[in-house]
Amino acid sequence: MLPTPKKYFLTAAAAEGESTLTAFDNALLSGKVGNINLIRVSSILPPGAEHDPELVIPPGSLVPTAYGYIVSSEPGQLIAAAVGVGLSPDTFGVIMEFSGVCGKEEAYNNIKSMLEEAFRSRKMELKDMKIAAVEHRVVKTGCALAAVPMWY
Image (tube, rainbow, N blue to C red; front, side, top):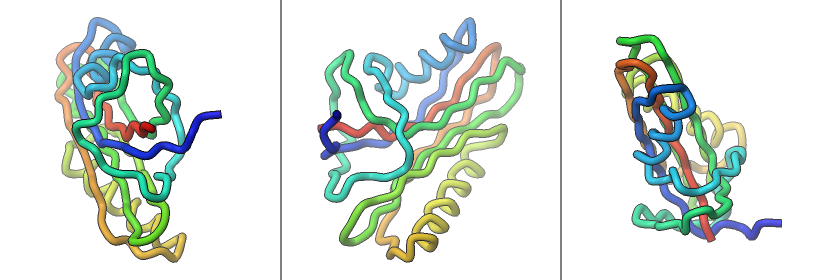
């Protein structure tokens, strides 16, 4: 069993690759999460977790991560990914992920709306939110990725 994470950061990055897998891998590298093992988790940020944008996670680590991504091999297509963390004043936070065929602004706005809805649904106060978004115009095979890695 993994311990409860105490730190997190947001990342959004895009890249090209020769294949869909290498485009994804290159986006991970560009987003500073390419040398860790992402364990996909759902959308709850542990209470008291601190935002640390300079967090460095040891290579090969198993890292709980909420993420969204899109890969496209349609040249000229605009793709985007975004992730957001909604923070309450006194308890856990909520993470939302989005990816789609759209631009960065639409991805950002989708995350904002989803965070607001998530807090309304939980009848919680939304004190603050942090959002990271990226868009990418596909050249050959491109990937847009947004993630919230959580660490100990």
